[in-house]
Length: 336
Image (cartoon, rainbow, N blue to C red; front, side, top):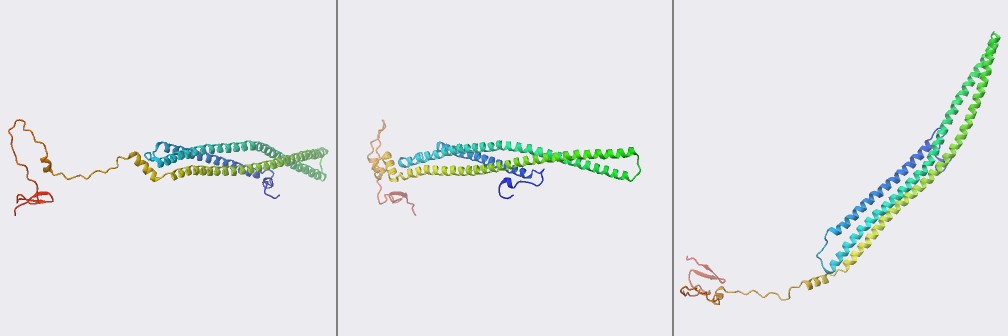
C-alpha cells in the first residue's frame, strides 16, 4: 500500500496488534483537545475584551476630561468622550461575539466526539471478537498438535508391538488406542480448521471496519482542521473589524478636532466673560500734609480751644540743620 490516506498507512502484520488504530485514536483525541484549547482561548479573550470595554465606558462616565472647556473645543471633547464610550461598547459586543464563536467550537467538538463514539464502539467490539477468536484458534491449534503427537505415538507403539511378543489383549489395546488417537486427531483437525475459517471471517470483518474507521477518522480530521482554520480566520477578521470600527470612531474625533478653532474659542470666551474695556487710571501721589489742609475742623466738645500752628511743608532745603531731604523723604541728620 502507498499514499497518504489513513486506510493505507495504519496497519500491522500482527493480527492481534491495534497499534495503527491506537495511533489514530490518540491523534483524534489530541485534535479534540486542541479545539478545546482554542475554545478556552476565545472565552478568555472575551473576558478581557469585556473588562476592557466596561473600563472604557466607566472611564468616560467617572473621569472628567476638560469639563470647563468652552465652545468648539468643548464640542470636540464631547465627541471624543462619546466615541471612547462607543469604542468601549464595541469591545463589549466583541466579547459577546467571541463567546458565540467559542460556543460554536464547543458544539462542533462535541458533535465529532459523539459521532466518533459509534465508530469506536464498533471497533472495540470487533477487536474483542478478533482477540477472542484468535485465542480460540490458537488453543484449537495446540489441541490439534497434541492429538497429532498422540496419534504418532500410538502408531509407533503399533510398529514396536509387531517386533515384540505380546498377547492378543495387549495388541487389541494398542490398536484401540491408535484408532482412538486417529479419531481425536481428525476431530481436532476439524475444530482447528473451523476456527481458522472463523478467524479469517472475523479478520475480514475487522479489516472492513478498520478501513471504515480510517476513512471516517480522516474525514473528521479534514473537517476539524478546516473548521479550526476557519475559526481562527474568523477570529482575526473580527479583531480587524474591531480595529476598523474603532478607527471610524477615532476619525469622528479627528473631524471634531478639525472643527475646533482657536480664534473662535478665544473670541467666545472674551464675549461672555468681558468685564470692561477701560483700564484703570494712574494712581496719583497724594501729599499727606496737603490733605490735612482740606480736612474739616475737629470739634472740641466743650474743651477750651487750643490753636496750633500747622506742620511746615517739606522743601528742598532743610528747615532744621538736623534733617536732610532725600527724594521727598526726610531722614535724621546726625551732627558730625
